[in-house]
Length: 259
Length: 286
Ligand SMILES: Nc1ncnc2c1ncn2[C@@H]1O[C@H](COP(=O)(O)OP(=O)(O)OP(=O)(O)O)[C@@H](O)[C@H]1O
Ligand SMILES: [Mg+2]
Image (cartoon, rainbow over all chains, first blue to last red; front, side, top):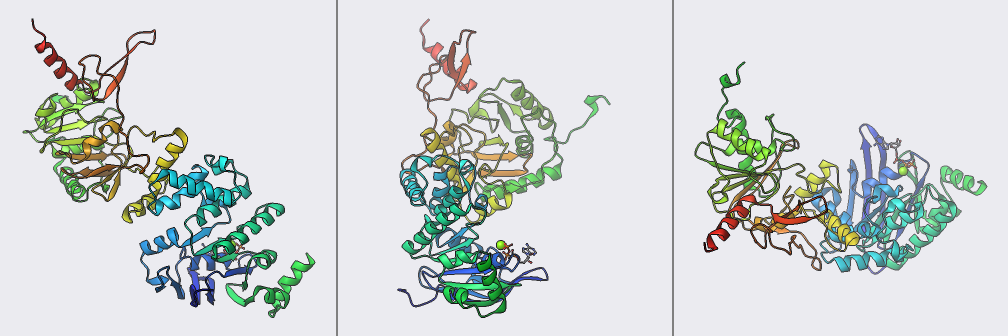
């Protein structure tokens, strides 16, 4: 990687829902261009961790340091609400499992992809539309669907539209929560291929939550395995999946192999 | 009880309510375009006039004021006549149809054609004060957008119009940015009237009774109608002159003249029309 400093430094991070700890004591570094998978069973705290890292939930304990585009390193807890929202608008993307949560279903595809540009101050209709249309093409949505609303799209198209809306502003870091689950197996495979090639073409860093080890294998450099809110194992994805150390990971891997 | 025996407080509202509304108005004037919450009261009104405009008028009117009320652009509709009569009765205010003589002009749609002058107050009745509501129904979110000056969403609405119709189709309640800061709905005026708000000498105050919001544009404030660099704001314009008085560059209403689809276009501002037609008559030699 060109830059020798991590993008994110996560130390002992936890989020509490009232008295209940959704995740706790999570530490790792994320480097520019790196793809990190968070895997684990349902309820293990994957989404809680992702939402905490992206500041959609507050950091109840620990610290998250982020290196801004300008090079300064900030503790996310020190940022004002408007500074966090600026990160959401310009440096980060967030792809939801359910596309309806990340799209405006009654706004055209072009308007959905153009909105982040307008939020960043673009005021030239022709250029907004051209950029939006180019991005539709990059996510394999035909240009002539630019004025259709996602309500008329298939599940796979909606998800690709959501990805375009997130990538149009050239973010540095993208969070994805189960972006392929809920789709047909064949649609999943195609979408994963697309995500993988976009992420590597753009040199994006990404944190992707999945309960599907095959997804982690295909897309990520490193993997965190979660159970009961803790990270119980982490390392290079191939190592974690081929030579799991923790008994729980061994169980997880073998159940996939048998299934 | 005999209605003649009921004693109303001056301006109908009680003094405490009027003071509350005036305090809110001061805040609204101090933060041009910002929607200030207020405790809306019950007032006796015909439907569709809502309660916001009448409460504002009641809070600012006094016996030395002269009130003009227009419905669309007309002074002579039942609603306009009743509201003028109401304030004449409860506030002892004079009433007029002459724009230049009015100190307060309450309106439901239009801004008069005659230029407003310093010292005049325009009072608007607003149904929906939040310009972002169409795309973002959560009020917590729209408030945050105002607070953080995040107005990209309004442009999404304009983008959608151009994508669908080839131009910005909004012809009334066209969104404006007030004093380079707050996004505001100039509800319910037609976009034709938007340019009149920019650097207007008059004070413009807006009341949304049901939504409990008051906002204002003080005199000499910059008011920008939003647009794109390549699709700038274009106010409505009318090609033909008024069929009655011959005025051009004014807002025209379509009037159906017969059952065979005949129409004519005439001034919506009835005072402007009558005055111009009268001048025309004077100029015609006997
Ligand atoms: N809003 C909430 N309030 C209280 N507890 C919550 C809340 N959201 C999640 N939890 C709890 O926190 C734990 C972790 O939930 P989380 O959604 O992070 O799991 P997950 O790994 O993403 O699961 P899944 O694979 O089902 O999405 C669970 O026990 C869950 O019940
Ligand atoms: Mg989850």
